[in-house]
Length: 549
Image (tube, rainbow, N blue to C red; front, side, top):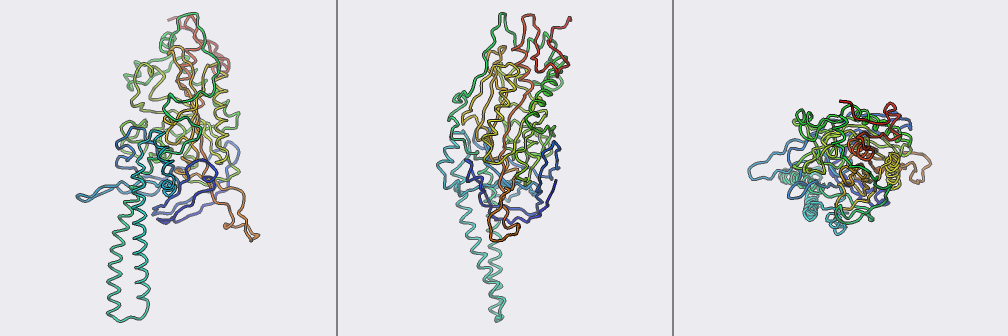
């Protein structure tokens, strides 16, 4: 692998123009000003097509010390805006204030937001916020943006006056005239310091508010709540039973597969022990799923399960707030992951990839941890909704023009996996009100669970376009060169970098798959048949039968 290290000093108000991907893809193209006080090393890498992976330890980050404005006076979870070119080593001091002064928490990393685009497309952005049931305050964002523009103009005017004074002092002057210019320069300097401090606070406040705006939405996404989602495909039909159907809890008790009571004493509610054949079933599901997805060109990964809070945020999740689904580690800037999508997304953080390396396809195994805040009721009992579980996740980084076709590929893989296990399921095009903050479009798969007497979600697949990559700083450089009169290949005629698109999809959420298999393959005597594809991965086990005890 060839690595080029380029150290670049990024100025405070340097503006990045929109990339070509914004002009081609139906997403928000965002760019902004940055305040960076340190140098950043960008790694430009051409990744081989083999399964060898390269991991880089993230640099130390500072954590936010106050509640994000996304959580003020709104219903969680909070959608966030596309953020880009994040610099994790920028250290943020805790905000302080004198009496009567409002504290504005500095973001620990900046979003690449095109405020001019938002202002020029106010109606579109407002409709998108409403359709996605976001609590973002668009009017406040636009007000803050106008204030920032006016303050920038005043700062530039004073800087110009200060430069004029400095130029005048280079010539021959009378002592009285020089002293007058010195005083004028001193007054201008003091005024500039005050205005620049105000500008910094205003910029930080603008960032905090604007980061609550969600990604734009695919035009074919149905508008409304979850009940407005459209069935895209139905596979199979519910199995007809000639006996009284049991749910997975009753089956698990008879087959000695689970222990929720002991887990509740040890860890609390919504935790569980798997025992006996359930352990073999989980391991078999994981091994089979990895094997099947790897056949389609995905590189296997086992991820860290503790990540920095900033990486969680850059992927579009909020680690703070009353109803957060994220477990944060007290006294640190780290969290437990709720999905392998987060650490996999961070593998190439702050990198420029070679176009020839795309697409990058990963299939990741990890344990996942979720608070499940607000979840209660009979529909969530047993293994259906738990705090800790194993999951196999697919993740793709690709060129912007390819992301919609890769979303179709991910859906096809999911449907093939579930079909081969003999499940009855339906695929839904999820409505706007059910989309998470990063998703441009999302498809869910719901399988029939006869013991629960309903369909339950077992998988989802999302195209996040450049929402995550703009904040994680994952770009690629197109291979084509910009035409110039020079015959030499140099930095001047290299094509500008573009942000990759990211997609994610669940290949196997183990607990819900266990629910489906136990309830759909149960027999009248209480035994459960193992689907044929899983048997080679379970030591040839064909049936889980009640023990003699």
